[in-house]
Length: 169
Image (cartoon, rainbow, N blue to C red; front, side):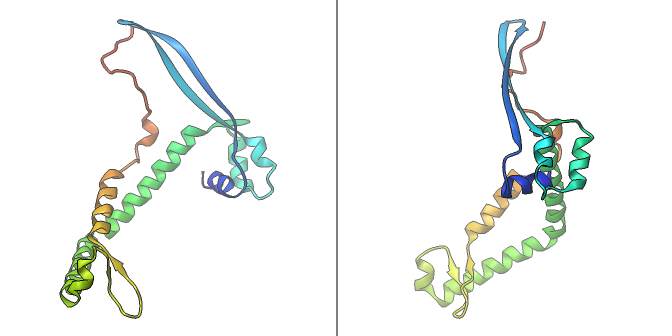
């Protein structure tokens, strides 16, 4: 997926087909329509790009002539989530201390420069170089950390609007 990401970012979109499907599904309370989407990537299109990694191309060719991209995207995002969680785990013992250092620096600034501090929540901490500090940054980091706690199980998930109370006949 990293090679495909690079391809998309620098050279083009690898999708050759996006299809939408719908079908009737009978439930105990009547017939409902189920909609689905499929996004296909043709391996031959990637092969025409001389900059695309040959080793990745060989791996993709082993899967056939086309690949249903959403499955790979979910795996890729799940892998990134695992890496992010490991990084959070490594940094976790220090983050609380860093938050305290930042808050203390802002408090010192507030005491030393009350007029400047009264103008907002951002503080320039040096006369030679601007270093912006904000409690809002800390809260935003905490919020993002909770929101993105883990997508490691993303390949085992899918989106649906089906009511869990519906039962198939």
